[in-house]
Image 1 (cartoon, rainbow, N blue to C red):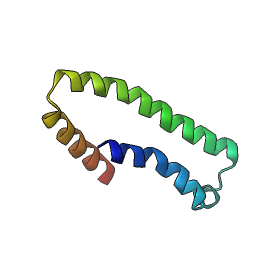
Image 2: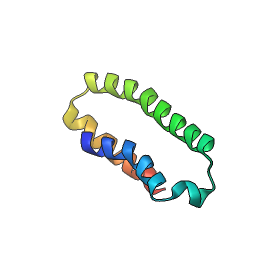
Image 3: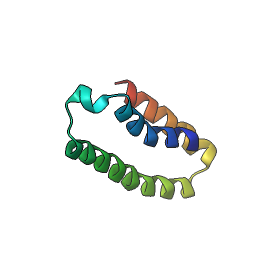
Image 4: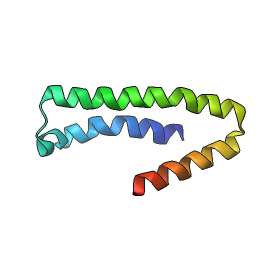
Length: 75
């Protein structure tokens, strides 16, 4: 889970190197806004997630989160 989380956070940098900003017509300010929005929401949801994790068993919480994230990313 930690590895996937790390890969998710670093993929936006890799996407810029691969030309995402050119493909989408983003200037540096727009790209910076995208990064801020991504990281702020990541930090915002990390705190409640950890609070839930302290009240539940990791063997239940982590698979449920994986299933929820997978099902929302497919739609």
